[in-house]
Length: 290
Length: 290
Image (tube, rainbow over all chains, first blue to last red):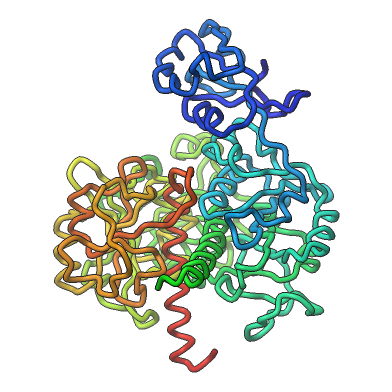
């Protein structure tokens, strides 16, 4: 049982540590291979007891010494409880069709986000604002940190186990599939200029499609009730120019002069909030509430 | 010259380290006591040269050995350049009157934010979205981390030197002053319920004043074009119940079920974005642009 490293086992299980993440794993409905307590981790048994009733679980509860647990654990101060959990498997087709609860798919595409903490925080934020799924994509040299690494799982506060996540897809193939499925690919960036110097279009282009150069929109100029895939690029370099050009639109978060950029997680929070705001307003209209 | 600790010197100077923050300090227009280069820090001289022209500066440029610099520096891997800078002094009256560039004051009040990184990130985010000032307040046992600590300054990416910041004010006095000045105090929190179980009001209350229990609003139900002071509480405990009750309104960031909270910086980003969106739309209307 290796918790380190964050790579799934051959059977697709990943390790999660600490009472909060183990609780999330047990509540997620994802398959569990085992739960492991160290001697000092026994203090968390009460909190987890309702989820570990012997009649209702099909996995073993293992015990180990503190010393052995420390050897397995990824964290510096392990809390003595861990689980092996298999994140839900999801296909691109699943992600491209709208779930019953949402008006249209709202996907986050991590395209070269290299800090595991940012990967986790972005997934947590996306889930909080009603994203329907996430894709961790690789493009050229720049991959995305695994959403299943211990640091990413911790930063996600368990959201990675609740949100449908598809990992390891090629960005070029994904962009083609999004176009076929009529899901609008939006290029976001932490930089005011998206790191790419295309001429800014003046005024507001209501259509996200059919422009030779993808339009540059403010967040509130985007119709977030459409099927959307939001592309989030590398922390430093942003999205590659090729990706930005093949997106249906580019989004510029307006910023006061003198401020270079937001951090990646704050930028994602702002954009998913705007999506939630518009979707919530639309839903309220449909339900006839003011 | 003590860079450690983040407490201003008797004359009110704080130390900033690294070429980026030193550059920000030199550009901020704030008084500088000295700039210090170590031997290996000399590689940053070219970048800073335009700001250090001997004819135009009234402060000394000091040199030291790498060994001495390491003893002074707060960071583990110091970059060999530092400055002593005096952040702009600001009074509450300054903050309560609208600057010419903004439609009304938009203040962020840090009320018990204990992580210096969060303090810095929140100031950076507030500045990015056009906040007109910040107040680091203390209430009861819970103080706010100094905005001038090395970690907070780094996380702010220099915004602390550009945004007018008032530190060390009592929260109780501040709330009274805000009421007198007709600045609306809004209680925000990273928790969906704000950590306080007041009955949620149904519907939208267009007036933020005159309610016995402060109304609970979604971010887009707040009129952010008014004079606003946004109260941001402790990362874990949020704002105290007393503070929440004396605020003019409470803001609940809507979140999908199963997600406990956003991190403090992401929540601040969302709320200041909403303010920027409304203020930008108002300004566009005034200017007659669509």
